[in-house]
Length: 170
Image (cartoon, rainbow, N blue to C red):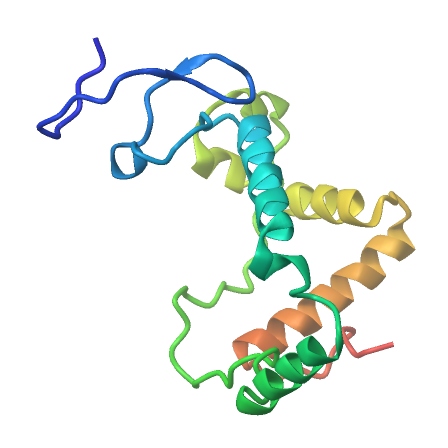
C-alpha cells in the first residue's frame, strides 16, 4: 500500500475528469479533485477558469471602462515589467569551448552505445545533423548560413571578439 510520511494517510479518491482512483497530493489533499494526468490537469484548469468567469468578481473583470483604467493604473505603477531585466556581467557558468575540431570517427556502431562521451566525439556530424533538422534543409548553403548565424550569436552571448574570418554577418 502507498505510504505517506504524514500522520494521516490520504485516502484514494476518484478524479472528476477520468474517474480513476488516485492519491491526492498531501499538501493539497483537502482541495484536490483531479489526478495529475495531463488531460485531467487541463480539465481542472478549464473548470477553474469557468468558475472564475462565472463568479461575481470574474464576470466583468476583463471588459469595460473601469477595467481599462485598472489596467492602465497597473501599467503606470509597473513600467517596463515586460522588458528583459538588465543582465549583470558575470562569469559564465560553463567553460568556453575550445576551438579544437573533434576527429570524425568512422565507426557508426558508436551510435548504439550509451556512453555520452563516445557520442560527443561525433560532434561535427551531430552539429550538422542538428542544424539540418532545425532548418529543415540538407543543402550545404543553408547549413553554412545557419552555422554562421549560430557562431555570431554564440560569440555575442559569450562576449567574444569575433576574429576576422568567414563568419562575418551577411
